[in-house]
Image (cartoon, rainbow, N blue to C red; front, side, top):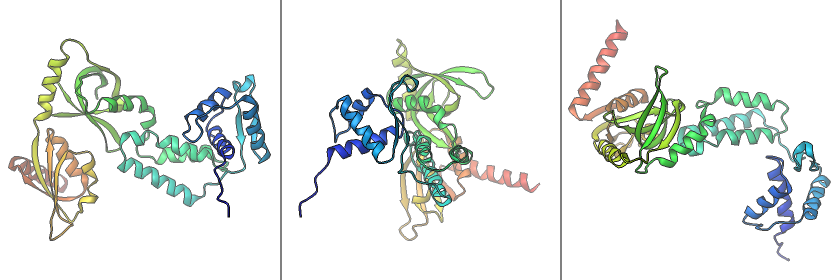
Length: 321
């Protein structure tokens, strides 16, 4: 039996329908897509594009010709290969998005609403607008797409030796300018934070990204001196040892946004693990431990262990009274 070959024409037509299902395309844009595709890497003539459009129409697609009203773009208004999102599929899709929010980095999260929108828009459901609103209402981190530019810019500077000038809306609504050394972006309590070090503050600081108005790299004469001072602050970290009880190391999702130097699993019981944190912000670590919901015991240092004990005793007395 003759082995079937790869049909370039069929492949180009299928890819063309895929691209046009996302947005209308002009002849120039179509050829840009063809050139960028590793399986095509060539442009085609206007007549060839016309033949491809006629093929799509022959299989049931509705394709509008380029004209002034559509900015001279080919527009795919309908194709017969649509699908319908039932309740089970919707629940799976929502669980998938929640998984992205829980486990992926900010770069992956940037595209999750765009992904959901494409799935919904490509469906045959008549209530697509309501489905979009349903997802918006249930998403834990809702404003990430509005922060896309800021998140992308901050992420490009994280882990680099640079000083950023950040214009920030403080909690009292005043606009302040801070000079910071960015370390990483993190998601905590359904909010995106920039973990950084600030000239006028000891220890690391968590700045809410949705309150950052402007970001600029500092390049004036004092930048190197500022960078040296900030790097010194970054290096001043304290070790904290915490024992987690009845909790597997793989279940500790808090490890994703805290600086963890070592995780040791009890060889006699995998549900007990000892974690060494390296932190320059004990307050943030305390909040993360208390909000984690895990049973834990602070092993070291003594001062932090006593601080946690005192806080828990006072909190219990406050609620008991």
